[in-house]
Image 1 (cartoon, one colour):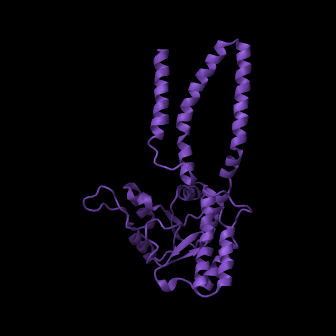
Image 2 (cartoon, rainbow, N blue to C red):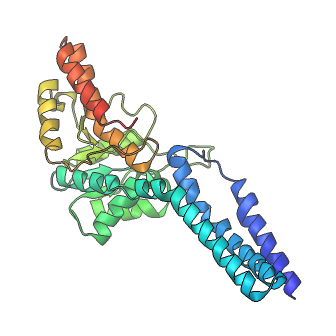
Image 3 (tube, rainbow, N blue to C red):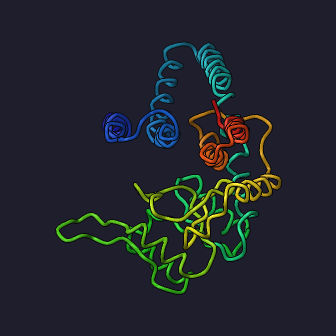
Length: 296
């Protein structure tokens, strides 16, 4: 019956709306808020049907002519109001910051580089650049969290040509754990250039020879392979000279704003290095450069 259909629609909205939202374990600020926004579409789609039924009821309650005028005017007001309130957010979401990041990274890394990437925007973005745009097919991008699954290590192993380190279940545990340090050591042992987009395990940065170059971190085999501060500064100056960056900074807490922090990282590291070397003038210059790349 019609009543049963409407009841099922209301129950579906309750399930897809309040019940589903109650299961969220993400914050509503920053990048987690951006992820949460995607799931708002599910209850909104069902709510649209309820709104349509309500509009039909309003039109039936008044004369058809007056009802159509009322509904049209109300819809126009809602659309214009929502468009005005959303314009700033929509413009921010359509910034080219993340795309610039992906293109800058792929243009920077040498042939046959391996990039260990984290984050939805970087992981999905590199998939698009490889599969849809066909950029840098020689570069392999690995997502460490996916190595905890059964299917992903097989794909990565086939691409790299050897069984890659993957998630293991410790005795007495049902949750797999990724030996992150062993993974990096295995990749570096291939002789291919290895980079990470960020440290993806707690304490991983301690004891792993590395240095920041552009928005990435280069992983090397030995501490002696890490360039001295002057050489590292020159390498980053050379890399940044080829980057495409926007004239204005994106908002903090957005995908673009978070990616800009990757660009600030090498200058913060250099500031600390020159501070420790007793060169406060150069340290402050690099600290200022990092601030200029940090959304505030």
